[in-house]
Image 1 (cartoon, rainbow, N blue to C red):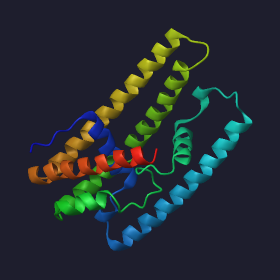
Image 2: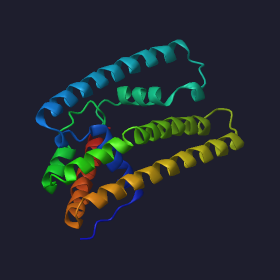
Image 3: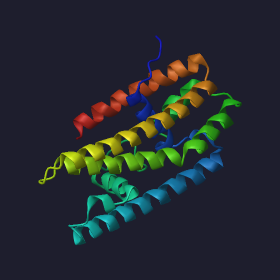
Image 4: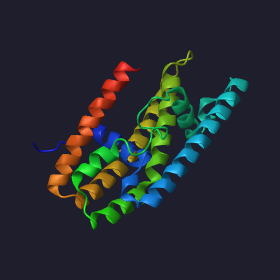
Amino acid sequence: MKPMINSRFLQWTTQLFLLVGLLWLLPDTAQAQAGAKAKRRLMKMEQKAQQTTQEEQNNPQQPVEEIKAPQRLANAQARQPNRPLELGKVPNQILDRVLLQLEITEPQRPQLIAVRRKYMIELPRLIKLLKAKQDVFDDAMNAIEFNPDDIERKADDLAKTQGDLLRTQTRQMIEIRKILTPEQFAKFHQLLEEERRKTIQQRMLNP
């Protein structure tokens, strides 16, 4: 069966590839260090989320545009702790199950590490920015004082960020596909699609 790649699959795969991490690519000692770093990052994120929530409670009239994208992401994760793509989930859960079944070769291993490092700053930044702009757009659409021109401007801004994210995701997926063999890529897509369906089912059962 020929693998089918679409924009939704690209977005889901990118978040999984970046936010969950590829710890299986590292030596055992590096895996332990990376796991410890992930826990420290999660603790910092939770602390920041609590601080941001308190600040918003103390300043209820704060314009939504002034809330920074990282704070938006931290708040969303704090409000929805069961989402499977967040750092709170132990890294070796999803990608390990998928990529370890691909029989990655030693020459492929450093190439995949390089791809992850190449996009590990830009993609999370775009994902956070998109989430913030989605919130701004939603607030404008649901505002008591309806302003069509303002909504259209925010829609254009949101669409631009969506386009930037999709283009970056596409470049990353192209690089991954170049590294994997056709057989590996077909299996890669099949297994990730299965994981995506499981994720959707879990969210439906645990909204």
